[in-house]
Every structure is written in C-alpha cells, then in structure tokens.
Length: 148
Image (cartoon, rainbow, N blue to C red):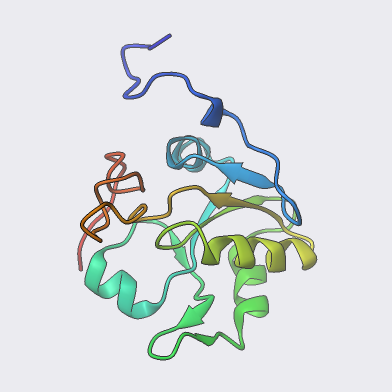
C-alpha cells in the first residue's frame, strides 16, 4: 500500500531484519525514515576519501571504521561513536555496500549502542559491468545526498 508521499512499495525490509551480533539490518528507506523522524542517528563509517570523492548524506555523522589508504582501522572509533550517538539512542550505520557497516555495528553493539546496519550501503552492489549505483544503495534509492 503506497501513501501519496511514499516512493516505494511495502517490502520485507520495511522492518528491521534479524542479524547476529547487532540490532539488525534495515533498508536505506527505513533508515532514512528513522533519521527524519528523530528515531536514529545516521553514522557514515566510510573513509574520509569516500565521502569527499563519492558523496555524503547531509546531517550524517562521520565516524570512520577504516581509513583510506590501506583501510587502516580507526583507533578512535570507540570514542567517536560514543560521542556521536547519545545514550539510549539507536544508530544506523552506512558504508559503501553494507559490509564494513556490519563490522562497525557489531563493535558499536559491544560498546552498548543499539546499532543497525544499512543494507546496500551508499553505493549498492556491483552490477554485471563492475559498477556501483545501479543495484541498490542510498543514492540509487533516491535518498538525500550531496557531492562535496
């Protein structure tokens, strides 16, 4: 059932999906609904370079999981995510394709944060031509983003 404001049909991802080691997986659309309603903090765990070159979500809090070049773990991740997500709030974590954000969600959960992974990530999966932004992802779904 679509409302006049809806841009997608109801699907199984309109509710969190169960996950191991963190609160669950959510669709980009559900993550955005939560953020817009003030029910979650959007945490972008991509590297600074990814946000600078590919784009970012206005209002998202940047807490890098692994930094480019070399994809070196961020030694300040724990302190930064604790500072980004108020006690008792939930976080929705976004990366490029929804893989690194799972690891980051598990770590945030271990720190006592209710953390969800955003399925598909910012750019989605690779297509048959090895390109992103054609199969899912925050941008593909038409959600707010900007290029810097």
